[in-house]
Image (tube, rainbow, N blue to C red; front, side, top):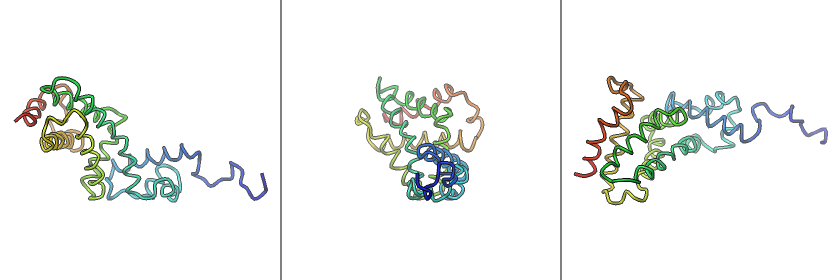
Length: 196
């Protein structure tokens, strides 16, 4: 090592191992987008939450929009859950879908991502476009083609609105319902929406 090269202990603070720094930025971004939404979140605040320099955020992601898209890439589980819900009798699709979707809101690994998605989509046209693309992709998987696209879109809008009321706004008594009671209550009208 030449005298001009810094030792690992002398490197710029906040530039740890690339994978660790990137994961820390993503975690901080999810928390910040969930807390204040896309519009109010700043690269500086996200960097502060990750204990890195703001320039490192841009180095890894290029822009706040790209960073937001990366945080909701974890919401790809929605498409996976839809695929799983497609398997089985079509007359019970909405029940399987509702259980998977609302279950994701209640799971600690995915709840933060979903809060980030909802708050951000409501506060920014840029974030709304990213979220819209993700939702449309999730609702166009193989196996759902026997339902009209507009029916699937309405189903998605209904569960999105219910999640907003229950998990973001906390309206009662919806917020306090047991998950299985919620699924049992909303599944019949959701199924009717598909089948009418």
